[in-house]
Length: 260
Image (cartoon, rainbow, N blue to C red):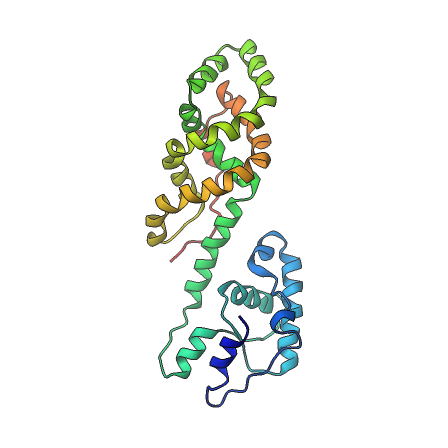
């Protein structure tokens, strides 16, 4: 939708709408916050290309309706030492109508930190580390007595280790079959593990019990192929009593700064 927002801007008294070189369907991507997380240096470069177009217009500020674009452009402007003012379109229009709008950039940055930590958690290595913490609940949640059987095998000493090692190639096949039935049982432990890694405001904590199951239902089928190889040996070590989730908890580091 290109024209509706322009129709809102043009009538504002004292405002001249100036288009960047690439606009509408030809517009350049800002670089996106996802690039900012996974490939920050590339993201800064992509953002700079967009900001160069902003500077070429000699405009006083650039308007954006997308909060992700706003954040990416602000970060890119800071990293590239480019004094470009990035303004939320809805706030700009509200001010033009005479409303007093308080722009709390600290709140914006803290909200971004929560989002960043959530995305970081989706990296296979980080998700695998979190799953290691909830091995006790995962094993207990295995259907058909499989968890009890695997615990028993793990206590058999070297023979048990050999059996579990022989089962290891089956894990990529077993996990996708078992996880849907296990998810509801492990969800309370998973929610606690997420809260340790993602400091979030109270209103978000209240929503997590409803949001997390739906998110995991959609994410897990796609993530398991990358996660299972990372958790297979740690799971065998756990079953053999070589490590515990309590020992691992000491290495946990908070993935974001405190949310106000």
